[in-house]
Image (tube, rainbow, N blue to C red):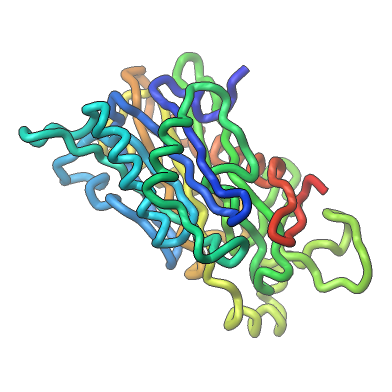
Length: 327
């Protein structure tokens, strides 16, 4: 049973990455076009083609969304996505040709692997070639290859995260989510309200991952003198980037509302969320013509987005010197 993003009809997902450099990209392809929306929160975004997704702008549909590592350098991968789509005559008709509409968001992974290797046009093109409708791989793949969480004390006390995805069937209306989790804060399992990945306490001697005292608890730490002073040195390399998609029929305004509501799922699963040190950006796509109430779609977009965040850290493996929950 496919309970990942590709359960949404009209969606294909592909990854490409450099495992040595710990960076990569993920493309969500909707070749028939999808009504798009976006909601960006947090103070440190890295994006491309987001203005056109807002109401009162001409373009209604997008043909792919790129999630990529490499910080602003990684936006180059969108060129490869555009080339792949242009070769297949997919894009916005401008009379003399077709221009593929490819919004993108980046995360900062340069501090974990190699800073001189970033996703480029060739990697973006490769991700499109790898795109399928089968269940999406999770963990240290694509845009999640170099993702990490819990960075109040810097990378030295952080944990490895990754890419996660989830979906729900609401009686023929499918809502799916995919996210690369690269947060300043800790990841919380909303079912238990327990930290499952985040900033690690400074310990003397070995301690089992996830055991009592293992996590510093970023939110609690912020109340302390150490937490307040640490903010001046905390890494700025934090962005949670993702997409929610549905086969429900949404207008452009409704797609933007769904993207906005999906942020509630981010806030449930990451603590704290939307800080000035994060660049949280969520896209929303409507690929179909199923009748559905936008409030229901948005409510479940938040649910599956929170699930996808939890799955991202549960599927992550240790890398770059950082431990993961799978240990």
